[in-house]
Length: 232
Image (cartoon, rainbow, N blue to C red):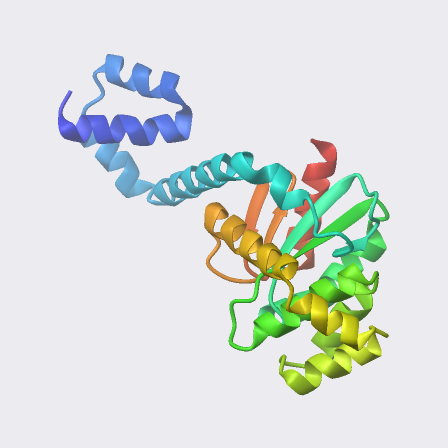
């Protein structure tokens, strides 16, 4: 088999499985026919690329799924005992994360069995201090209140972080101490490692069931993924 035939067989293996690739090889179907088909149906290549990327993402997730779905204590929205888990990698300085928040709130309201694990992934300038305070809020059992207030108050800076902490009713002295602790540092480093392992390039990013999703995909996209996870 020529080098091109090997490449075509690999593409067909992705699309039809290895049995299909083997049948193509044995059938004697030439390069010209396959090339002609792919030129007439270029969308097939995009579909195959998407399938390949989804397969790679699934394989990466399988190695860290337990860690990803295990929240920092208290950093959970919705039903803490929910049977379906949506994990969000988020940043308080991310505009698309802020835009996604009402959609997550709606998902929680519409799905009583949904547990939303928030992973603080500060990748924007100035966001790490807000992420650390969010972990302090979780440690005090007031994560949801801080999370809501921080997004409502706009981009994170010293003033908005303190306002959010006060709005959430945090013990500020204890929160500041925890925010600077090694525990908070390790948690942020863990989330960064998980995001890198999963191949995420930005926020928001999501994990639900066996799916890895990047970007502000909207309510419908997340709701469909939750439905798939529930049915699996």
